[in-house]
Image: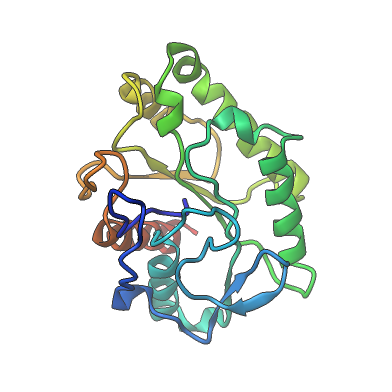
Length: 220
């Protein structure tokens, strides 16, 4: 969920960082070298080359505003835009990188509180991928929980609002049909969409981050 907020048709970012996404000394980011640094946009710099504004910073800022007693909050960016759920199967590069980064994040004594997951548009291209999405997503969640030693780790996913193909509704049905404990969903439907009819605008990313934060605080 690295985000493409503020990108024009030449893939240039406008550089605008909304106040909801401002840096905060109590919000850290695990950078590509597995070093904790003060978080700032774009969070996925060096992880996903096209990343700009996503929901991560607005999520973290709202969580800390409502729960200041949490102390320092660490974000561990792992996303890669335009990928299918099959590219996150156990043993793939993306999956292994995510697990490695998550394990590195807790070596200093931290705790993994939740996974935020916004993916699925690329699985809307073919009927096969859409029809297999629910099983693949549930397997992914179970694999991550097992490999991180956290069988009830909260998992908050985003119901996709757009699709790169004709099977968006099938993927959404699969997302809303996941039947595993501690899995919640927020719906991106209705958030403002960019010129490419695929990605959410900067302000939409801010709204999405707040929705994720509210869901996290209400349930976990």
